[in-house]
Amino acid sequence: METKERLLSIISPVALLVVWQLLSWLGALDPRFVPSPIGIGAAAYGLIIDGELFHHVWISLLRVVAGFLVGAVPGMAIGLAMGISRWARAAIDPVVAALFPIPKISLLPLIMLYLGIGEASKVALVALAVIFLVLINAMAGVLAIDPIYFDVAKNYGAPRRKLWTKVVIPGALPMIFVGMRLGIGVAFIVIVAAEFVAARSGIGYLIWTSWEVMRIENMFVGIIVITILGVLSTFLLREVERLVIPWRKERA
Image (cartoon, rainbow, N blue to C red; front, side, top):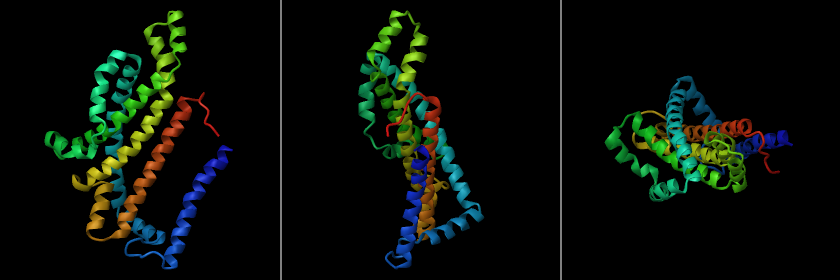
């Protein structure tokens, strides 16, 4: 059944591309604004041949991975602490409630004021976008653990380290991975937006400069590439989740 599901996940985007190309051939889509998949593929080939596409993808990936790690690791630690301790929740939850709703891209000018326009500001922006999603889901994962597991651990005199490694972390892992999948998606959104205005490289820069000179095919290449990266990163996290949480069964 799993093989059929994966096959369907491959067939559906291919079918979409076929319909898109047919509509282009039939003249239903204006090529000045919506180029055909073949035209986009030709533009992508040109960008690959001169190395420009790989350069932009590599730069964006470095920023996303660095920012994701800087945000996810402390977010996980703080979220677990908030889930296990009501005192930590009382102290930190108001701060999270105040800062989480702020659109993270709106903080870019402030971050650049302190960190400059280099890589540090972009990594910090991604980290800020990721940390709250991982934190909130990690906390929710701990709070969702049945209290009976804590009672059993305490009754058997489990040391605090065992409580964390055998109850808290395993019980919260499913929600932590939910937060990380959400975080990696938001990380790509934020980095592209940041590269629109504060970069001279990256996929966002490619999209923006292509729009400025009306090279619409190149713009679509950037959009499709960021889509593919988002899908691949989510798939990678799902596979890691399967390995780390082998006891969890997905619903049909």
